[in-house]
Amino acid sequence: MSTVLITQANGGDHMSPPGHPERGDRLVVLDELFAKPRFAHLTKKTAQPVELDVALAAHSEAILEAIRDKRPIEGIARIEADTFISAKSLEVVATGLGGALEALDMVMSGEVENGFCAIRPPGHHAERDWPMGFCLINTIAVTAQIARQKYGVERVAIVDFDVHHGNGTENIFRTDRDVFYGSTHQMPLYPGTGAASETGVGNIVNVPLAPHSDGEAMREAFVEGILPALNEFSPDLLLVSAGFDADFRDPMAHLNWTARDFSWVTGKLMDVAERQCNNRLVSMLEGGYDLNGLSAGVAAHLRMLMDGTSENE
Image (cartoon, rainbow, N blue to C red; front, side, top):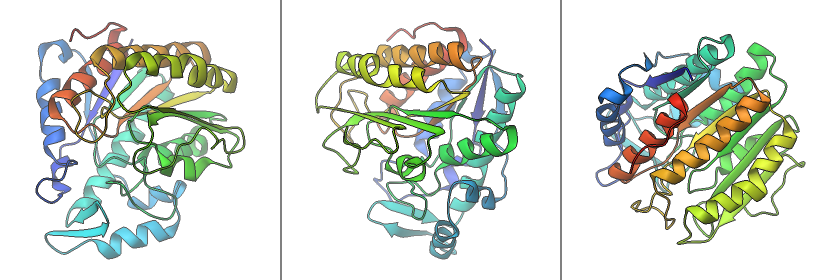
């Protein structure tokens, strides 16, 4: 496999209050991981900014007005309950978008087969009109739309294994038959969406997982729910919302996945990409708030993307 790793040099400039789980240290620990010898031969790119208006591919003007209006001249401002914005947050969002779109370009051109974007803040809770859940802009939704507009991709699939349901991604695409959204997530849990009955126009597949369930329950959910529907959809491009907060150590939820589980689900998604869309897969970091769990999960995910092998725990 040929894989591109996108990193974000200014990721720490998006500030959150002391004690907030979505913090710059998340990227610091990943940069330390990526410096290890086993990742030395990766193609690595530093995310470059794009104009923030690119987000209008998936969002309304209302969300850009909200984050521009809320951005403080200095310090940190609250947008809603647990979502904050700081003076340089918009620059960070712009580089996150730029990094995701560069990975898309490289995959669609055939320069690489897949890519992982280590970017923040996460995006999958941001709805068409409003930021929420630590998320300012829904980067994966924007990437899906740009893939359609720029490359004429007809059928885009988004699979989300973050422990929280990606209500924003579902909100944006729930009536779009040419975008598949499949999610496993703990329920009950924030944001309270993601019931199995939420099916959109037949393009949404939610498989909730019970608190304290482990990787076996996740495997069952994918084998019986997500993967058959994904294969039937037959995507031309596969995007992955890769959250690592289902790790057994994570403080934000109560699932008990290990690094082997992240390897397994990554491998299964790669199998679909190989069969359906010429290996074209772009993965983006969402959650993951225990730094050890985040590092272990990303290592497993990236190792599988690189060469199809599992990361030792």
